[in-house]
Length: 111
Ligand SMILES: [Zn+2]
Image 1: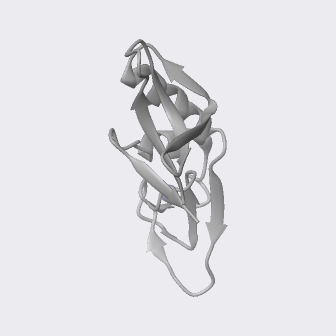
Image 2: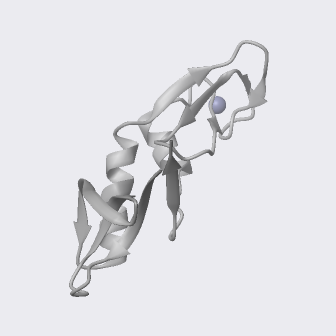
Image 3: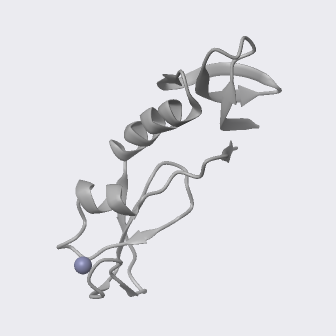
């Protein structure tokens, strides 16, 4: 089990978003370190937002989060489970960035 989360260094001089396996840190995610928790999370948020992906479903329609038009397409950021339903006019870096909020204390579990 690998967990991605935010931690403070043992020396308490920085925060980092890290991947942990069997209680050991196996790496800092995309150099997401900062003097404060907010700075490290800000870098992680930017990193995630540069990698969001769009998915289209065949048999469902949802209202666009921005304009209310029906759409079958959603954006998903990283491994976070929130789906941001957006129509083709609003499926953009800008709108995804406005909708995506990073939980302050998060843990993402992989495999
Ligand atoms: Zn829209």
